[in-house]
Image 1 (spheres, rainbow, N blue to C red):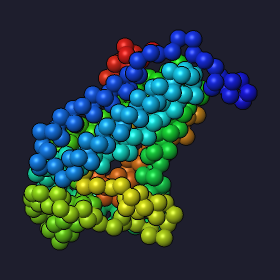
Image 2 (image 1 turned 30 degrees about the horizontal axis):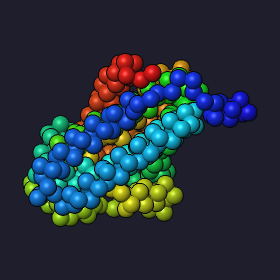
Image 3 (image 1 turned 180 degrees about the horizontal axis):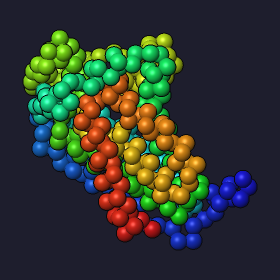
Length: 321
């Protein structure tokens, strides 16, 4: 423990002078979306807030860079990277502010779901297994999303420091790739779409086009399951705090957790992999069980997660020290 603490404050003999690769990814995303905001200024609901938000993020990034340059050590690098990962929570609802200007596509995805499975798995899964123990396990899996990110990134920092920056780059870049897809594909998922068109239509296989409905309304269904459960309440609180009618296809929950599992496999720690595995399985299933995603969202999340991991790992070997 003393050795680890000492390493935190040991000055790096060869500190990186410019921005980290992951910070350049953030800057690229910031500039791209800022350009979109400028071109859609008269259509956007909160363009000034979006612009000032980006200015604040740029200032925070510059501030963390300055802190690292004054004291280039593992601790300040950790703080620098952690700030960028934490800011992903700000970027997520921002996708809604952009894609709400486009016509909603849920009627197409719900129809494709019906054509592929002959039903709506998000509607039937929770009804087939309404038991409290299943409900709590599913909510536990869904709630494990952010802890899984923390565990994997911190593991690399503490145990595989030479690959820490690379792992953080892969996670952050994967998030931004999903955010770009979410901006281009305004799909809200079952919890919002079912609420908007009514469950009667859904059970009859009728999927109306809601056009710009979600530009004005953000109501969603109550999460199905055991309402007195601890993890159920946690999921409901998280939905109330930051959920928006956006980011359904592909499921970034499944995609990012797939990236995390592959990073755990890459780390060589079988203990880490086996600890995360049951949470990963529950998380993938829970996205459909709690009606956050269509089944095709989860399948697409799995496929894109694998692709993003291998592509970004190759990029990381070139751009990360």
